[in-house]
Length: 305
Image 1 (cartoon, helix red, strand yellow):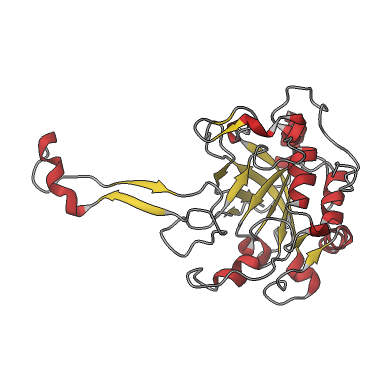
Image 2 (tube, rainbow, N blue to C red):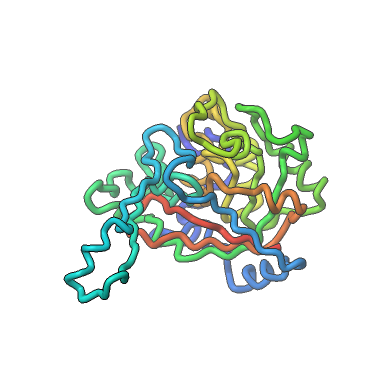
């Protein structure tokens, strides 16, 4: 299936050069970033990341949930060889988890189609021992852009969350933006609230069965976002896109955004607080860990309205 078959009007391969590894981040010129900063009107700060803890963290099948390996109070005697006085010690932890568990950002190397990643990079650039030779998450550095929050739960009058499998189309995004009085512009990061995180956790993700569907955007919504030249799309669900997948095609929207256009995806964001405050626009900053060759990174995006 080619990008045109997936309905993508514009393909960004080569747009910023044959060797480009940053994709839509190239849209964030100094002028665009300065304009994004002007969207701060209230001075309210929201951390959009989920808590990272041992247990109670949503993770899709096959992804390693977080666990701690710690030096704790039971290890007090291990400091004696360091000359520690009685009662003196330290605590340290080693966190083991999938980079795509809880709130995270997808690198452009995360997904491929027709054996090619964004900008034509071959899928075989990825190696288990060394990571990706190109398009790893370290190429992001940092993201600062205007964020636009579209509250689809509010738009559909759905109560606390959209039903599993609810497909959000391009016309729906356009209508929500109009109702909220915001315009999606080139270089924006669009945040889409489905309520899925609240539906899934209910205070704890432990013991909650994975539903048969996930509310999210379909191909027409992805197309709408592509046409507006956005730099990133974030959501409070597991994959940004609707499950079952649009067009019955595995990772259909991922392929349209990540692969065809170099548009980044942010998943499992907690958008409940800014939505409650009707903070429809602001400055979004994201600083993923510089995991060389990584397919993604845990993040705690900061949104300032």
